[in-house]
Structures are given as C-alpha cells and as structure tokens.
Image (cartoon, rainbow, N blue to C red):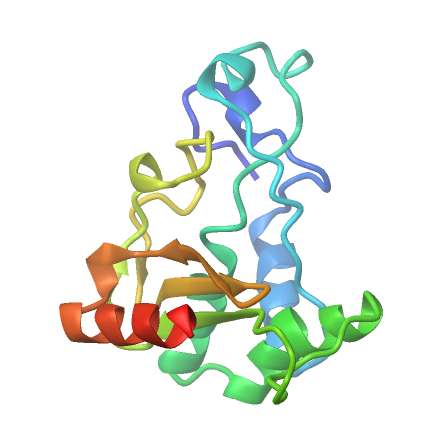
Length: 176
C-alpha cells in the first residue's frame, strides 16, 4: 500500500501496513468472526520522532483512541453484530490475559462507556496521546468513547460527547 503521509516515517508500523486486497480480506474475516482478538499496540510517537527517515523512525501509531470507535461503527452500520465486536475487543483479550470480564457486585469496575450515536470525524489533533496523527484522520465514525473507568475510578471523560446530566450522574455514581 502506498503511504498516504507526506513523510513515510508516519506509516511505519509493525506489522507493516498491507495492500488493499489483504485489508479487505482481513475485514471480511473479522465480520465473519474468524479473527478472535483485535488489540492495539498503541505505540504513539511524537511528530519529531516520526519526522525522521523511514529507516530511522520508530514503528508505531495510535490505536487506543480509534480501535473501539472504528469497530463499533462497523456494528452501527450493520456490517457486523455487536457480539463479534465485543468478543474481539473485550471478552477474549480479558480471558487471554487472565482477567475477569464483566461487571460483578463487589468488584472494582473496569469499563468503557460509549455513546452509540456520536457521529464525528476522527481528529488526531484532539487525541490525548502524544501522537497527533492517524491513518484514519477524517474518517467518520458513529460511536465515541465517553468515559473510561479503571479500578472503580473515572480515568477518562470526554466532555464533547456527553451531556451535563449524564456527566453529573456518572461522577455522583463513582463518588460512592
């Protein structure tokens, strides 16, 4: 696949980017449920690191802020069922890592809250990561991660995709 960035170092990732035919085949396999786990290496780098020549640039790209919205958009648009997405990004990775998946009374909450009607474009300049670039820049997605709760504490809250009443309810709930 030809790199779409002005500087090739921005396209350097491991494993390397694939051609269109391979990407479509992988997407088809995902939709059929044949890809058991989807994970992001989330190897962000600052512009000054990726501005180097291809050989000298470190491999890596942001995935943390795009993986869930992109895959859940496939569900919202009817290409895949929700169970396939959740098994691939939550259930199977947790099992692989020996973690308990799900919400249980008496356990600390580790979860993400999503707005399934938050249509927006991916804007890397708004990422919280130090990397402010993405091959998905400008892609329109239908889902946004609104909050992340880690060990029962609010670790991330997006003011952009949540209304005041929901935010206050969430903060109140977590304060107890």
